[in-house]
Amino acid sequence: MHIGLVGLGKMGNNMRARLRKNGIEVTGYDANPNVSDVATLADLAAALPSPRIVWVMVPSGPITTGVVENLGEVLEEGDLIIEGGNSRFTDDFKHAGMLVTKGINYLDVGVSGGIWGLENGYGLMVGGSAEHVEYAMPIFDALRPEGPRAEGFVHVGETGSGHYAKMVHNGIEYALMQAWGEGYELLAARSDIIKDVTGTFKAWQRGTVVRSWLLELLVVALEQDPKFDDIKGYVEDSGEGRWTVEEALNLAVPVPTISASIFSRFVSRQDDSPAMKAVAALRNQFGGHSVRKD
Image (tube, rainbow, N blue to C red):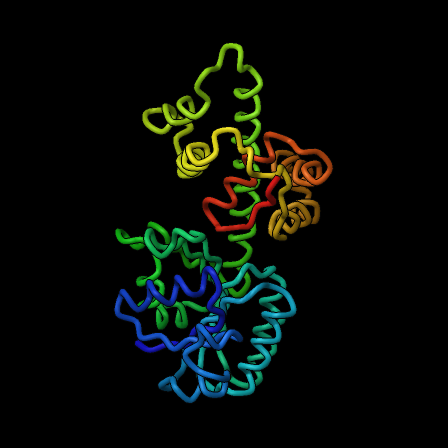
């Protein structure tokens, strides 16, 4: 199978490498000519066999919408666009609606795995028709972790459902990271009796009910900088957490833990909190997100 990939940043470039490693031919396009395989989207379309598949992996919002619009001008009836960025699920309705009149098909995919996806594989949450999902399945199989298909892949439902699932996933992620950050601050606050904070977290990695990948990443971060001296306790929010709370408000679903984790990020922009230093370190570990240095 031969596909196009638009967007070769931290995620897209690693995805291109994993796809190629697993037997998928990839022609990539990026605005940065140093990483791009072709010069224009038109060149990308010309390089692909019909019916074409183009995966879009660019920042959500107007940039994604612009790429989808531009692809709509160079692709043809029967081609398929897979939108894998962190888009709001409501944008999928707009994007699919833009393409349907041209006969171009559309799937939305929530992608999780961060900068570790190249090595470990990506968790994939897909929205769209079963026919198009099955057609693109070799791509999903190449990207997801090795093992049973049910692990790391789900066809969630119709258009928008993939990004909706990813939105909720990231809302949960916000809350989990906040809990780890607060636990770190409590341990670090009792230096009179707690002599090995890093070792405490490391001991929890095996046999305990709180063992997790986030815990493993926190241990890595602590081993690199035990007191987070080089990290400012300032944490950005990338959108999905806010969207999760907004959706919960619309549906009258209580999400107090997720809500509190988002407001804590706002607090981090006012005070240099030890807990938020830990959250900032975790975001850097799993996603390569930048941190502010003291």
